[in-house]
Image (cartoon, rainbow, N blue to C red):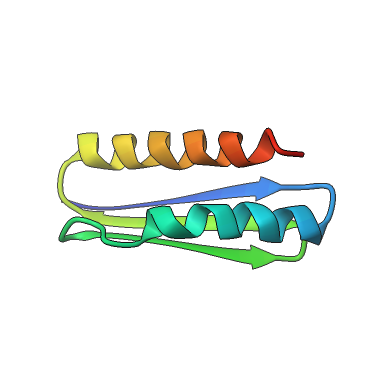
Length: 77
């Protein structure tokens, strides 16, 4: 099954958004086959896109991991 999710987080300023996106970068590498995760900064927003050809459980686990890493990065501010 093909699935897609987009998560957008808004921050006080673009400096924080860039720092959060940079912190998420390593998690977006070396992904399993069929999974694509990309994160970009747009002003004060971090936009993460997840595309998956696979199981719903994998998509949910990926979203959970992305949000956990985002919260960890946010705790620094």
